Structures are given as C-alpha cells and as structure tokens.
Image (cartoon, rainbow, N blue to C red; front, side):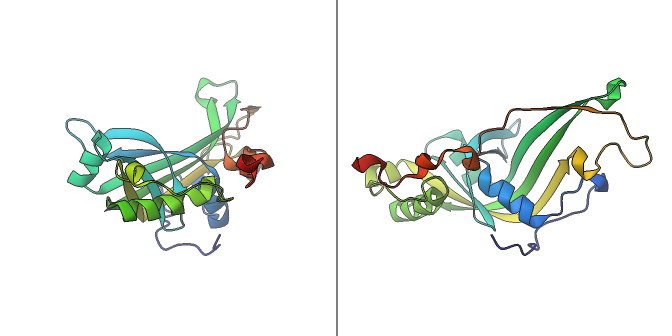
Length: 207
C-alpha cells in the first residue's frame, strides 16, 4: 500500500460530513473486498454486472467471457463506472426517517484498456491472481482457457468514497439533532482477511 493520496480521489460531495478521505483505509478496503459492480453503456438501459476484481492502486482488473454482453458493451464504449460497498450495521431510532445504515462505499469512473491476445490475457490474469492466490501454488494458465476470456484494465479517472460510521461521529446531517440510534451490526461479510490461513497454504496440493 502506498499511503499517498492519488490525484484521482475527489473528496467533494453534497454531504461533506460523509466524505471518506482516509486514503490508507480506502486502499485497504479495496484490496480486501471481493466483488464490485460494473456499470457499462447499453440501450435502452445501463447494464450492471457483479465481478470479482483486483485493485492495483490505479486500476481495477476484471475479466469476462469474450463472447458475452459485457465484452460487447465495453468494446462499443470503454467508459465504465465501478462501485464497491460494505454494509456494517442497521441503525434504528424512534423517528422513521432515522432508519439507516452504517456503510463504506467507493465509486470509480474508469476508462478500460482491453486486452484480448492470449499472452496479454495470461499476464493480466497472473497479476489479478496475486490477490486471491499469493502463495502461487497453481499450474500455468492454459492457452485454451486464456483464449476464451477478455481482460479489462479499468484505469481510474475519478474516484469518490463515502462512509457512515457512528464511532466517527456521523450521526445526523449537519444542523439536525443527534438521533438516538440503536445499532445492530451485520455478521462480517466475505473478505480476503476473513479467510483462514490454510486458504493460502502453498503446499495444499502436494500433500
């Protein structure tokens, strides 16, 4: 992790009290989460799909079948929006309008560098696998598998991040009374850090 705030992080938003500006925490969040949502241009509605991803610091690495709807849409227009979120707790107070959530959320607007030759796909996938298999215990990616997919390096042009966490004093909009929230945490979600150490054992297949 770099710790250096990137130029693409835009901290301005209507609810400035919800702006998430701690880059080290944002970066750790993006490296730990497993699923993003990718929105692409389509007619007559935008097309959104869930994808596993690897965050590199300046881009999101994703991939898909080269014969599907996502590939066709990105070839037609390489501008995409990527969203990653994590709900933390349900919040309840006496007033109906004070029913809310604690959460983290990141939105990135990206331009896609599409890679579809076998060698490009293989190199992309090895980089992406560093997130999920840092133990590098796998056999090489076969040509047949690489020829079926297309790889996308989604280069970040602009990113915004929001969070609402009561421990940080984010109770109510500015100027409104502090709501007496009751907090009901969700079970921990699916994250890389939640996996047991044996999930990254480089000798698992040799025993």
